[in-house]
Image (cartoon, rainbow, N blue to C red; front, side, top):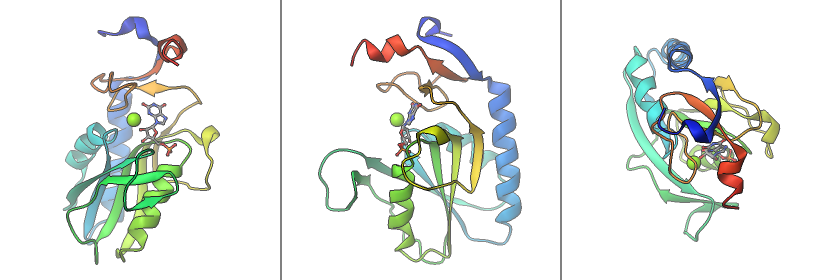
Length: 183
Ligand code: XMP
Ligand code: MG
């Protein structure tokens, strides 16, 4: 791995990630047979997971992306979360599945699901590749969770620190000194 020095350990190998995504895709395919599935990926962190997940689904689906930010000012905000890129389709009659990389405090997912629920989807569920329940600040649980992780900063498989490490093919714990140096 190109960044071996920054990583304290590997949490999930590519094979473990693949098994996790396969089992999520199987459950989702079963639950969404005969539905009008629209996957809504939250950028940027979910794009790698989303790409793998959709290729393992055995039911028809459409994909959309949203981007949200915890900072900045915008017209549509929910608490500290602001939509920086909204959907380009109407979600009336869609069975919406929000796809997150990691459920941490839960604020992002709670806010996004709150906003989307007001647009009258046929159904609305949440799928998160990772769950870090120790950090939760709002009471939200995902309908589909890949792996529960400890309260450590993880990178790889789409997750970044300062926009780096997203391209790692495994999920890794970042050495605290990598980010505390810059605090
Ligand atoms: P909340 O707290 O709203 O945040 O659930 C979810 C977003 O926070 C980012 N996040 C992380 N990113 N390693 C990362 O690379 C982590 O350990 C981590 N914890 C939270 C992530 O962007 C997620 O969508
Ligand atoms: Mg991030």
